[in-house]
Length: 51
Image (cartoon, rainbow, N blue to C red; front, side):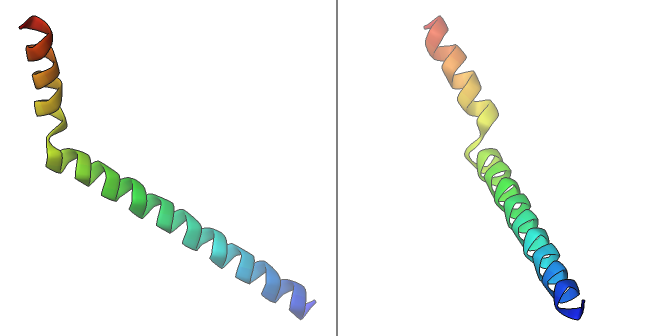
């Protein structure tokens, strides 16, 4: 019983860690997008299409 509880706790911790890592990755991606200027890129694309 104690072993099963320990295993469940370890699994929950691993899942929480994976979720936190995924969230951090998504946040870093969003920050990188904001840094390189996504709006500027879109404006540049429209500018190129219009000439």
